[in-house]
Amino acid sequence: GGVRRHGGLAAHVDQRPVVIPKFWLSETPAEAEKAYVLDCAEFGGVNDDLARKMEDTFDRLGLVWVRNTGLRTMPEMEKLARVVMKNTMKYTGGANPRDGIVENVYETGAPKEAFLHYHHEMAYVRKSTRNLGFLCDAAVEGKGWSYVSDQTALTKEILRRDLGRKLRDKGICYIRCLTDRDAYASTDNRTVYNHWQKSFGTDDPAEVERLASERGLQIEWGQDPAPPAAAGDGGRYLITRFYVSAFEWCPFTDTNIMYSSVADDAMWFDGWPGVMDLPNSKRPLKITYGDNTEFTFEEMREWIHLYDQFGVPIKWSVGDVAIVCNWRWAHGRPSYDLLPGEGRNLGVILGETFDRIGDLPNKWPVD
Image (cartoon, rainbow, N blue to C red; front, side, top):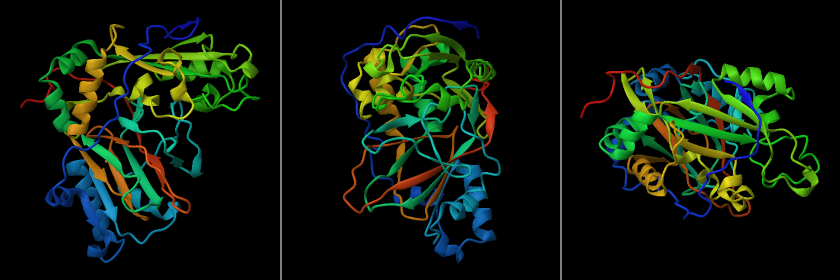
């Protein structure tokens, strides 16, 4: 895509109600959970039998949650996740400000005060990821659960509705705005989501343009709409646009599957300290339909409720490892609080990359 230059985003609806997802609408029957939860104790520890069962469960369901591993460190848990996740990707061109914990294992990159809408990882660039691994080395009973939403079931349901048919026919546009780290050097960065230097892993605008083009992004260098006083004019503000299908063909099911959500809109920041204080038009994310028309608030709310309808929890304990297929499941979590002395920490591994192809003709699911 070409490079255009102008100011920040217009056409955000600035005042609209906050919709907090429920993530999960009904108790998950123990029987259903049994399908994807593997208890290490039943295998006599981490061994070849467990490894085989992990691979089989993941292939069939796209979700495996291993409990009672007795593991305590990220490298040990990463090794277990590798049973399913043979290859990993480096996090570049991503939106979240992730830092490495150990090699290939990243922080989740989000504050505990923010609720994280269901989403597919890296849906907003051409190079996406096949799966994710979550590793837990700190947890509190009953707090800080993650949730996954069954996209095979959701896709069938959303295509019965006007919203799903509009998404199928029009596609989606992902708009991201990244600030300039150099301009913010002497500020507190409170209203910053991510700087383009951190997202793309380079200080060179020409290299950013090359990487963006590789990822199918149209970019423009524009004007920062909300620079703090110490940041002057905000420096080089990067706006990227990615036009793509709202669905993605899934090789495991051989069907087109929902691959987009409201997580890539300004409402992602409704609970995010600092950025939530900015009006929607100055927040760094936005989605529109692929023909540049706006989503209505009612459509956004319906989409959130549909994700909730097919959600199930992952109730973390130390040593747990969960591997999630990025096609067949979306992931998210509510906000949570911690008392003094309590900790909740997940490491994230991003699986092998694949090039997005969008939906394929004649691959829509049938009821």
